Amino acid sequence: MSTEIRRVAAGDKETWFYMRKGIWPEAPDEYLGYDLDEILASENDAVFMAFVDGQPAGMIEARIREYGEGCETSPVGYIEGWFVYDRFRGSGIAGELTNAAENWAREKGCTEMASDTWLDNEVSIRAHTKLGYEEVERLVHFVKQLG
Ligand SMILES: CC(C)(COP(=O)(O)OP(=O)(O)OC[C@H]1O[C@@H](n2cnc3c(N)ncnc32)[C@H](O)[C@@H]1OP(=O)(O)O)[C@@H](O)C(=O)NCCC(=O)NCCS
Image 1 (cartoon, rainbow, N blue to C red):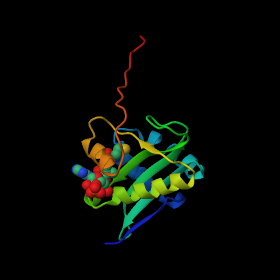
Image 2 (image 1 turned 135 degrees about the horizontal axis):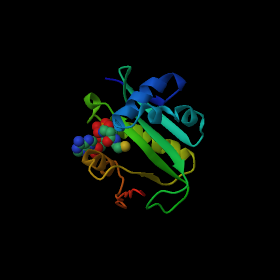
Image 3 (image 1 turned 135 degrees about the vertical axis):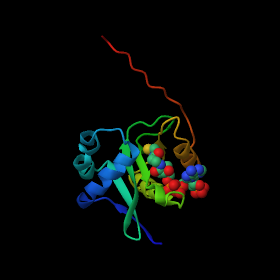
Image 4 (image 1 turned 180 degrees about the vertical axis):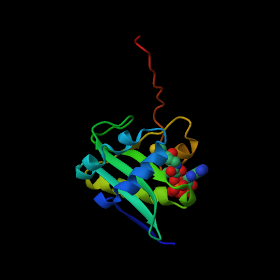
């Protein structure tokens, strides 16, 4: 089994879109696709994709943000999205993708990397922790209808 990690290019947009759908299955397609070109053109964003024996296996979206919760420096690297297809999970692909994103953020001058996930996403929380990410804050979102 050979794993290749590389930056996404314009030709990967469809594959990338379906991986986003894997993270946010409830999100409308327009929302999942509206910023792909913007991200590809941005110097502050990097998306890495993993291929196993040539098959798309997963991706990480990283961004340089001015602020990251719990961070002591600015700017910081930020993991915006992280996905590995079921059949490829548990074999270190997310770890390799994270390394690629962290190296990119380091090259951009960042000394900290931050991320977030849902409170009930225990697999993601465990994976973050195993890869050296420390939990710094828990956040609850609220909405009130202004009828
Ligand atoms: C979270 C996710 C990206 C992890 O992908 P993965 O390729 O299976 O992760 P890896 O195999 O690289 O594992 C990374 C570390 O997390 C640990 N880990 C991964 N899955 C785990 C699980 N189910 N239980 C316990 N630990 C786990 C691994 O043991 C590894 O630590 P180690 O290097 O010390 O062994 C994947 O489960 C996924 O795509 N989930 C759905 C989307 C999602 O929730 N994304 C994150 C929120 S944006």
